Each structure stands twice: as structure tokens, then as C-alpha cells.
Length: 297
Figure 1 (cartoon, rainbow, N blue to C red):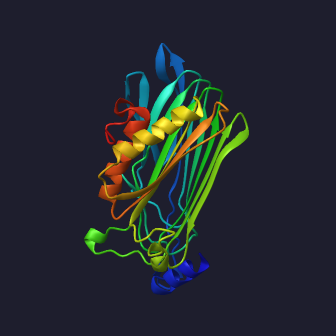
Figure 2: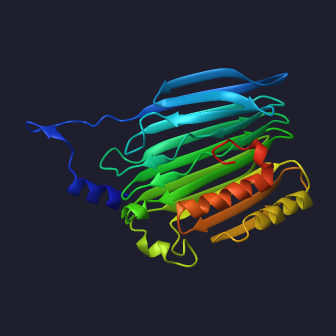
Figure 3: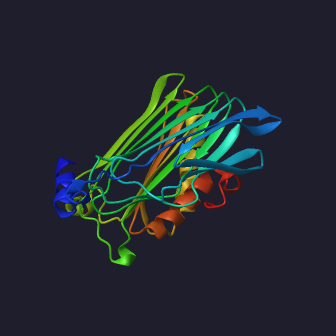
């Protein structure tokens, strides 16, 4: 990461006026939302600060839909965004974003950081499906996802990354990206994942064991009640749903009939449009299309 920042600083030094350096303004934002069950899922508490905004337009078929918005229009070095979502017992919610999040070139301030904190209560169900994150050349982004699930809770998580905009003639040569996932059930770790790209990534994108030339990739994680066989059936449904789409995928159903089985699917595609088609079909196969926000249906 140090190499990325030092090269960027040499080509784009800090702003200055009359010889005095000016400190660039950084983005900060905190958004917290919680839901409770009152005949159906209803808003309980809402807190917004800085550039973090949350909109809850409607409840569809008993599931509240909420949109996380960064009104700054993107992230760059030193920016900080924190999201917190809490579902009470017997509630259901779907979380998405109105558009892609963008990580722009970083010249100073260290990486941008996005922290997601999730709590899903007893017999509650959360679908977390933000639209894709777009990484530009020399961007730096650290992102974390911490989830705590109670007994009978269900979580469907999807995060997708697009490397630049090749249709606009953009090439991504250097960047820093770190994704940190931890999911716990009643305090016990049931899933952990770390993903990191740093410095020059051109040679990494071409390796068959890594991106194999892909310009977009994603991970889907489903944790929920049910036996291992039911999760295997969901995996088979995903394979059927993405048939004919030019995407590389790997899907696994994991568990030991513990009541918290996991379905993990990873996708890589040449571009974001192809990846979106595969993800839309896969998500619908797992949870049913009627549960997804309109942007994904």
C-alpha cells in the first residue's frame, strides 16, 4: 500500500495556495437503522450523520426495504463511512443502495474505510445486496462486514467488485483493496473471509488461479436454518439459474447439520454487466425474486 500512495503523491502533490498546503476535506458519515416487529416489520430507530443517509420507501410482502446512500458521491483517501443495521425478532429487511459505490484515486490520507455492523435477531431475515463497488485506478479501500446472528436467523449477503470502466478506455493498474468478513451465531464464528489486492494488479488479473482476466467478481454468502441437504438444493438451483451466462463460478454448501448451514458462491466475469446477470439469477434462486429490491429483480 505504501508504494501506491507514494507514487500517487509524486504525480499529484497536495493542493497549495501561496506556498501554504491546504488539507483536503474528508468525508465522514454514520448511518444506523433498526427494525421491530409490530404486525409486520416496522422502523424502530433511525440515525444519520454526515454523508450517510438511509431511505426506507416501503415494506413489500412483509419485508422492509432500505437504501444506504453516501451523498458525497464516492470515496477517496481518508474517508470514513459506518453503517449499522439491527433486526429485531421476527423481522425481515432487504438492504441495498440506489447505485454503485465508487472508490476514487487516493492521493493522501490513507485508505478509505467502510465499516458494516449487522445484528439479526431470533427468526429474523436480512438480505444485504448493495449494488456493485467500482474501483478506479490507484484507489485505496478497506471494508469490513461484522454480523451477529441469533437462533433461527437468516442472512443473505452479496458484494460485487468492478475494476474500472474498460468501455470508457480506463485501465486499472494499481490499487489497494481489503475486504474483511466475520459472521457469528450466538457469539460463535461460523464464517470468516479475507480478500486483498494491492500494488500492481495487472499480473494478478491474468493468473488462472486468481482473476484469470476477469474485470468483475463477487461473493454470495447464505447462512440460515435448515439441513445441509436443503442448502445443496439451493446450490443446484443456482447452477441452473446461471446456465448459459459467461461467468466463472464456484459454489459450496458447508455444514454438519448444525442448524446453521452455509452456502458460499464466488463469481468472476469479464465485465460488470455479465456479472450482474449472473448475480441477479443466483440471488433469485436462493431467496425468491419477490424478496429482492427492485434494482435486482
